[in-house]
Image: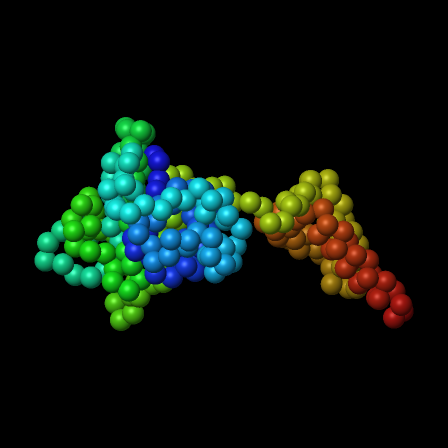
Length: 245
């Protein structure tokens, strides 16, 4: 489903840059500004700085004079307005609405969806809200529900991307190679010798100490590096005990 973010009468250049950044990290690129405060807002220094590298989104963004011009190819409109109104589309939380919207996308992938954000100073006009199919409300603390425009865009962009399937989490640390059964058996033998040397294990009456250690090591799913560490501990214990004799 094609996705568009539409900013209405934006008054702060930094919020345009923050919106571009929020969109790009979630894989969205279609940004339209309707009658922003500055005609050159896409080139202003504050905009570029706040975009933090999302310059392609700014480069491809469009500036139009009216909302009608921003809605080409869009079949589903979502307003983002917190001001109570006595009439208008139903107010829904993003997560539940996006789940239903993503499901409908499978039936009609050619549809386009747009998220509309009003002016930082005045919000959305009633006439613009009335044109929308739903009004999204981000659940916040009832005592303080004010969100910066860029933050609101980021929340909705994330929720919508997750509804569409999300992105795979990138491993920050390469996975460690687990020790095999032979390495664990070698570790147990080493520890049995060390525990006997320090007098903790009585070879004549071992009871179930070693099987219990075996189970402990199995639950720990030791890596090869951890095997080396534990062997080093066993070696040091035995050496310390021998030095005292």
